[in-house]
Image: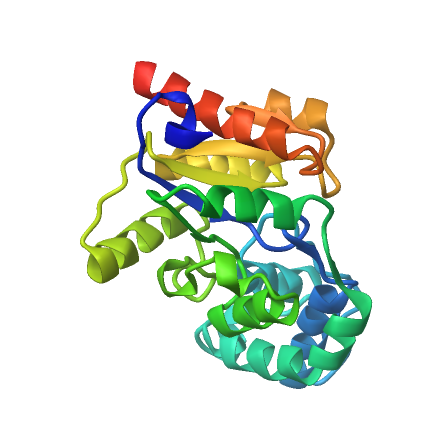
Length: 247
């Protein structure tokens, strides 16, 4: 797929969501949010966290409210970042044992790695240390430049993470990617919304709890049932880029 379907080599920044797109975490993330709540509040939450497509600090804010707590009572919501890192770190062995890489991910990552002008990283709601733990636990780091990734510790608003990554790319490589050359790959309607709001194309993969029809209805530029068919994924990338350049 040289040139992403152009007959020439095109530049592109591909940002991967982590949970339910690259990996399944085996319930470790929800346990981490509940553990952080318990550590700070002093009791177990009675209402479980709602997670899909949200940033870590947004999840913690909503978890506090759902359990009758005022987030402001505990100071800046950013204080939960350190607690989340501590709790997740204590679950590293459980993550390796219970989690796994999703089917087709290695093929998709390695195929794009063969494109000389394509840069791959992550865009995830996880705080940076927890995202790094997940990526390295499952040996995906060789395809992803985490130095230019966007994380929930960069901003609580997911759509702002796209520009956070672009700014890191400029600082590290002095390369600029616009809305037509940036593609977010994710599994939730909130990923689709983040791409639209942040100025990027989006490929939605129904590898999480949301089906193909729901993701298509959200306006994803391309939708796939999973990443098992590497050719279909590469074709989706090429189609998104062609439509963007023509748009």
